[in-house]
Length: 318
Image (cartoon, rainbow, N blue to C red; front, side, top):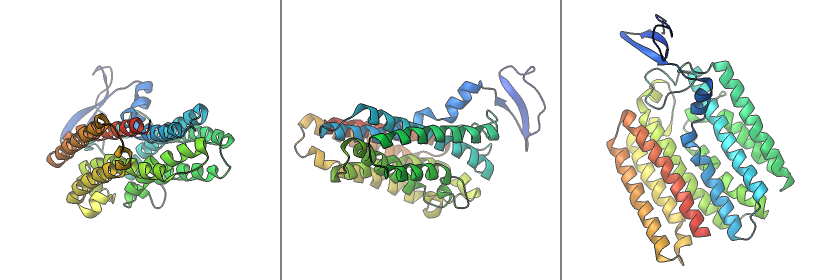
């Protein structure tokens, strides 16, 4: 598929020329550090930090906040997501889901910045670091917490690997609700308060539904490529119209689940939530209109909305 016909000396700033079909292009050269940073996808990490922020705000409101377990929860969440991003980079390349016609941000392995073997090794090192931080949480909570850590570690790999990869069989959305909403919010609160609450569950569900919209935009953009690669996302299974409707419903349900916080809230806070609702509606309209690479901007704005929603929830709790 790729035939080298040149070199770095001849073309400054580029690694090699390649020939594909009747097109000739160039693969950009990157430093090793920059390649690993981009593979970690730092712009998406707010999705894992946001639920921990809400869990900590709820614990603080109840007078249960503890700094060390809170910081450990941040480390587990960030490292687990980075490990998941590395795993997706590797396994999507191996399965053929990533190809030169990819519409989303460039992938490190598919672009040749990092070798498959190095990426797989990086996945397990990062996942191991997340597990180590998770084991430290056992000093602050009961030993049963280890089962949550095992579930997180399995999902990091099973999301895009194994005999039944979850993302390839329409279960990616469920994983996001669980691992970017319910589990991080509820258990961040639990390791500090040593109990669960109905409010923590409602807010975790709200944040999980809103975070699912990040995946929906990603799969909406990649509909044609995923269909060709037999990656059965919910958008491939049910169509683009389903994605547009699901995006809107997730946002509306998230806002409705947050309403209990606004019953006795000051008017300025209600105004901020109303402004967020308007911002969400504008982002949804943008998703309806755009196609292809233009949706990368919408993807970034959807991730921004998740973080802003988490900040608003935290302000309301405090």
